[in-house]
View 1 (cartoon, helix red, strand yellow):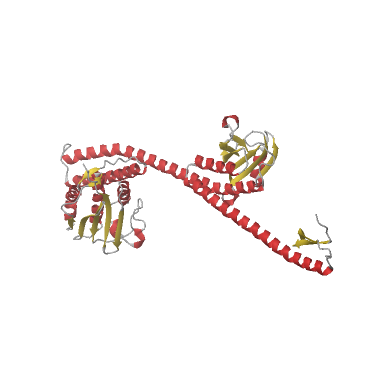
View 2 (cartoon, helix red, strand yellow):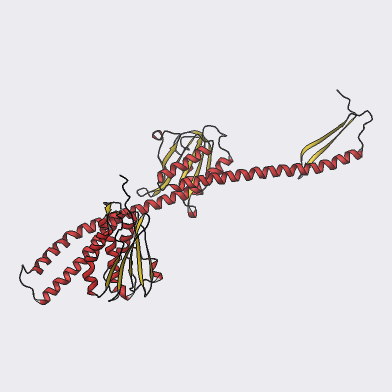
Length: 467
């Protein structure tokens, strides 16, 4: 115990409000505070209040910044997970998992807006649930549902307390429900995230803000998934169409070829000179059509993953010799020269020899077609550490810089007179690229208009058996 002689108090005021009090007492027998002491304490209190308020604001700012950094890091993880998958159901499940896990919700659902052709109206189809038994709740929500109707009309989230079965998006009554629209460009509503909780104060403003930001990110991932599904469906339709067309064309083509061969053989009677020319025209065009059908079938099988590659050890020398022999007559017919350069001890490679022969034949054939009479064509094979590099070089017409960017595009053919003078469908290089890459190789080219081109592809070397 002690006996107080006098005390002083001064308020701590900052920004027009009192944030605290400074208290001072005097226990000396002769100690009595005076006005001067109070003035000094008041001045101190004013300075202290400013310092305390600044410190408080700094702490709040620092905490807000830390929360923002954590939030950005969290949404970065969410974006990575959502955009890593192109499966729509997976994207929806991930978005709902994050919504429930990061908030105080007890459960929830997510669905997409669809169109009913018969009723000519929109409806919500629930596609994923969390912490609820999907068999006990509805998966179709009509546009007339009071909460859904309000969201479709306003585009805004709806928060409901004491939720009745009629108000519940999934038909399950609960204490509170928070329904957030998933919107893409032009505020078009494409889906709905709904959270539910059994306590009235379970979801706060931060939870609501988080789910709304999550919905924006989910919209992007949903759009990407839908685009992927559309592309996949279009590719399947294209693949099915090509399969049907090529199949339906092969039978009449085979029949036409058979009867044409009979005419050419003279079994139906001798042909005069003009008739022989007509038959030759038919046979040449049959050959072109067969090449087109074969190319379309190859592209279709590669893109659909149905092309089989019978990879094995083999020596490139044999493939190069077969290709050279098959094209030698055509090359000699235009007074062109074909040279082959490769080491005698070239190691075996590992790939499908038939497909590699197809690749090499296509490149050499292109060099022959797009090189002037008397031109030079070379095949150069160089072994590297893990692969063999095969180059087909010509001193022909070359490729313009503009056309080089489209060279491997299906059905692309340059507009130059020299190119258009040759028969072709613009499929060869596309097939070559896909075949090389399907066998763990790479293809590249260099070309200069008027000087020629070099096409190079690689093939893995066969691994040496340690045994």
